[in-house]
Amino acid sequence: DTESCWAMLDPARTGANYIAMTICLPIGDKHYLKDCVFQMKPMEKIYSTIISKIEQHHITRLHIEKNTDTSLASLLREKLAERGINYCNITEIYTYKKKEDKIYDNEAIIKSSIVFPEFGLYAQGSEMGKFMKYFTSFSYTERNLYDDSADSIAMYAEKFLQNRSKTN
Image (cartoon, rainbow, N blue to C red):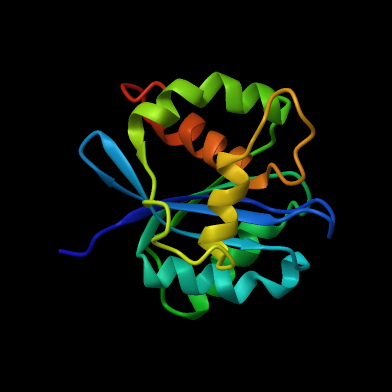
Protein backbone atom coordinates (compact mmCIF):
# COMPACT_ATOMS: atom_id res chain seq x y z
CA ASP A 1 0.00 0.00 0.00
CA THR A 2 1.53 3.27 -1.11
CA GLU A 3 1.06 6.27 1.15
CA SER A 4 -0.54 9.06 -0.85
CA CYS A 5 0.16 12.68 -0.04
CA TRP A 6 -1.79 15.78 -0.98
CA ALA A 7 -0.20 19.11 -1.82
CA MET A 8 -0.85 22.81 -2.31
CA LEU A 9 1.41 24.84 -4.61
CA ASP A 10 1.65 28.60 -4.32
CA PRO A 11 3.78 29.84 -7.24
CA ALA A 12 5.72 33.07 -6.73
CA ARG A 13 4.41 36.12 -8.55
CA THR A 14 7.86 37.72 -8.48
CA GLY A 15 11.40 36.66 -7.70
CA ALA A 16 11.03 38.42 -4.34
CA ASN A 17 8.68 35.71 -3.04
CA TYR A 18 9.11 32.05 -2.25
CA ILE A 19 7.53 29.29 -4.26
CA ALA A 20 5.78 27.36 -1.50
CA MET A 21 4.46 23.82 -1.78
CA THR A 22 2.88 22.25 1.28
CA ILE A 23 3.00 18.42 1.17
CA CYS A 24 0.90 16.55 3.73
CA LEU A 25 0.09 12.93 4.42
CA PRO A 26 -3.56 12.57 5.44
CA ILE A 27 -4.14 9.90 8.11
CA GLY A 28 -7.61 9.84 9.62
CA ASP A 29 -8.57 13.34 10.73
CA LYS A 30 -4.97 14.59 10.78
CA HIS A 31 -2.77 15.83 7.96
CA TYR A 32 0.95 15.47 8.68
CA LEU A 33 3.25 18.05 7.08
CA LYS A 34 5.71 15.66 5.51
CA ASP A 35 7.71 17.83 3.15
CA CYS A 36 7.70 21.10 1.28
CA VAL A 37 9.19 23.07 -1.54
CA PHE A 38 10.28 26.50 -0.35
CA GLN A 39 12.58 28.17 -2.83
CA MET A 40 13.13 31.66 -4.12
CA LYS A 41 13.87 30.88 -7.74
CA PRO A 42 12.15 31.53 -11.06
CA MET A 43 9.20 29.15 -11.51
CA GLU A 44 10.75 27.44 -14.55
CA LYS A 45 13.74 26.39 -12.40
CA ILE A 46 11.43 24.54 -9.98
CA TYR A 47 9.43 22.33 -12.38
CA SER A 48 11.73 19.31 -12.00
CA THR A 49 11.68 19.68 -8.19
CA ILE A 50 7.87 19.69 -8.16
CA ILE A 51 7.74 16.61 -10.41
CA SER A 52 10.29 14.83 -8.18
CA LYS A 53 8.23 15.61 -5.05
CA ILE A 54 5.06 14.31 -6.72
CA GLU A 55 6.88 11.07 -7.52
CA GLN A 56 8.74 10.80 -4.18
CA HIS A 57 5.62 11.31 -2.06
CA HIS A 58 3.06 9.75 -4.42
CA ILE A 59 1.04 12.98 -4.44
CA THR A 60 -2.44 12.11 -5.70
CA ARG A 61 -4.00 15.57 -5.25
CA LEU A 62 -2.19 18.77 -6.16
CA HIS A 63 -3.98 22.10 -5.89
CA ILE A 64 -2.34 25.13 -7.49
CA GLU A 65 -3.04 28.77 -6.84
CA LYS A 66 -3.48 30.27 -10.28
CA ASN A 67 -1.80 33.61 -9.70
CA THR A 68 0.70 33.87 -12.51
CA ASP A 69 1.15 31.34 -15.25
CA THR A 70 -2.14 30.01 -16.53
CA SER A 71 -0.36 27.07 -18.20
CA LEU A 72 1.34 25.73 -15.04
CA ALA A 73 -1.16 22.91 -14.44
CA SER A 74 -1.02 21.86 -18.11
CA LEU A 75 2.76 21.97 -18.12
CA LEU A 76 2.99 19.82 -14.99
CA ARG A 77 0.46 17.34 -16.41
CA GLU A 78 2.60 17.03 -19.57
CA LYS A 79 5.80 16.51 -17.58
CA LEU A 80 4.10 13.89 -15.40
CA ALA A 81 2.72 12.08 -18.47
CA GLU A 82 6.23 11.99 -19.98
CA ARG A 83 7.35 10.11 -16.85
CA GLY A 84 4.33 7.77 -16.94
CA ILE A 85 2.83 9.32 -13.80
CA ASN A 86 -0.96 9.40 -14.05
CA TYR A 87 -2.09 9.26 -10.42
CA CYS A 88 -1.82 12.99 -9.62
CA ASN A 89 -5.08 14.94 -9.98
CA ILE A 90 -4.17 18.61 -10.51
CA THR A 91 -6.70 21.35 -9.80
CA GLU A 92 -6.34 25.14 -9.84
CA ILE A 93 -7.97 28.12 -8.22
CA TYR A 94 -7.64 31.86 -8.65
CA THR A 95 -7.80 33.45 -5.22
CA TYR A 96 -9.41 36.82 -4.69
CA LYS A 97 -9.09 36.76 -0.92
CA LYS A 98 -6.24 38.61 0.82
CA LYS A 99 -3.56 36.34 2.32
CA GLU A 100 -4.24 37.59 5.85
CA ASP A 101 -7.94 36.76 5.48
CA LYS A 102 -7.19 33.27 4.13
CA ILE A 103 -4.83 32.59 7.01
CA TYR A 104 -7.22 34.00 9.63
CA ASP A 105 -10.24 32.12 8.22
CA ASN A 106 -8.36 28.80 8.34
CA GLU A 107 -6.39 29.26 11.56
CA ALA A 108 -8.61 27.07 13.76
CA ILE A 109 -8.70 24.12 11.34
CA ILE A 110 -4.94 24.42 10.74
CA LYS A 111 -4.32 24.18 14.50
CA SER A 112 -6.72 21.27 14.97
CA SER A 113 -5.95 19.22 11.85
CA ILE A 114 -2.37 19.74 10.64
CA VAL A 115 0.48 18.10 12.52
CA PHE A 116 3.76 19.96 12.08
CA PRO A 117 7.27 18.59 12.49
CA GLU A 118 8.81 19.00 15.91
CA PHE A 119 11.12 22.01 16.28
CA GLY A 120 14.73 20.97 15.71
CA LEU A 121 13.84 17.99 13.52
CA TYR A 122 15.00 19.96 10.47
CA ALA A 123 18.02 22.25 10.23
CA GLN A 124 16.90 25.87 10.32
CA GLY A 125 18.66 26.55 7.01
CA SER A 126 16.88 23.67 5.21
CA GLU A 127 13.79 24.24 3.07
CA MET A 128 11.54 22.83 5.81
CA GLY A 129 13.42 24.83 8.45
CA LYS A 130 12.84 28.10 6.56
CA PHE A 131 9.25 27.12 5.70
CA MET A 132 8.47 26.54 9.39
CA LYS A 133 10.40 29.63 10.55
CA TYR A 134 8.30 31.94 8.38
CA PHE A 135 5.10 30.05 9.16
CA THR A 136 5.54 30.21 12.93
CA SER A 137 6.61 33.85 12.88
CA PHE A 138 3.60 34.99 10.80
CA SER A 139 1.95 38.08 12.29
CA TYR A 140 -1.35 39.82 11.59
CA THR A 141 -0.09 43.07 13.11
CA GLU A 142 3.52 43.35 11.89
CA ARG A 143 4.90 43.32 8.38
CA ASN A 144 5.90 39.77 7.42
CA LEU A 145 9.15 39.36 5.56
CA TYR A 146 7.74 36.25 3.83
CA ASP A 147 4.20 34.94 4.30
CA ASP A 148 4.34 32.33 1.54
CA SER A 149 4.46 29.25 3.79
CA ALA A 150 1.53 30.50 5.91
CA ASP A 151 -0.44 31.28 2.75
CA SER A 152 0.29 27.85 1.27
CA ILE A 153 -0.82 26.10 4.48
CA ALA A 154 -3.98 28.23 4.64
CA MET A 155 -4.86 27.36 1.04
CA TYR A 156 -4.17 23.68 1.77
CA ALA A 157 -6.60 23.90 4.70
CA GLU A 158 -9.17 25.76 2.62
CA LYS A 159 -9.04 23.16 -0.17
CA PHE A 160 -8.64 19.90 1.74
CA LEU A 161 -9.83 20.51 5.31
CA GLN A 162 -12.70 23.02 5.29
CA ASN A 163 -16.13 21.54 4.61
CA ARG A 164 -14.81 17.98 4.67
CA SER A 165 -18.29 16.61 4.22
CA LYS A 166 -18.28 18.12 0.72
CA THR A 167 -16.14 16.61 -2.01
CA ASN A 168 -13.16 18.87 -2.48
